[in-house]
Length: 164
Image (cartoon, rainbow, N blue to C red; front, side, top):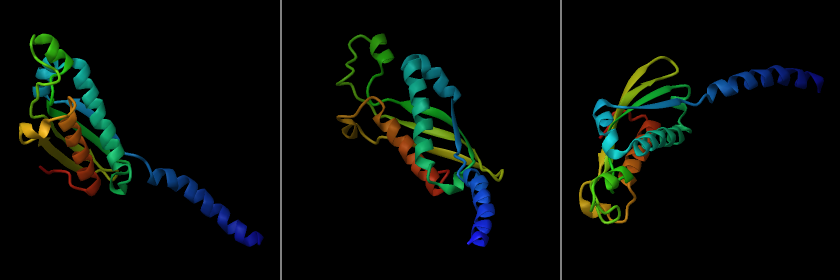
């Protein structure tokens, strides 16, 4: 019995050390592209910052179970961002703009790079915008942008880094 336990102790130590290294989550950072930086004042700094944070959060969650991205560094650039409804800043700047009945085609465009744990650098490119106003009824301000984030996260988890 002691011999069996003596064999298991080193194995347990190896698994304790290797386990966290194998499950090292990817780091995700999001910056704003130059065109979007020019639109921050129009859309509202708070809204854009929240969307940047939301993109990082959704991608982190979406790739959590993807072993191929363990230990990767994912650097995303939010290049375009369009709300389905006016943001607080847009509503304040434009008298008569209705934050509930005014609708628009929304979505997001994202580019960037993934540096895998092995050092391989992979490009990332994805965008999604709603196709027509009929699809926008009943949506929140950033509904289509969220859809773009979720679709990107799903694609990254499946190993599809450049897609449209």
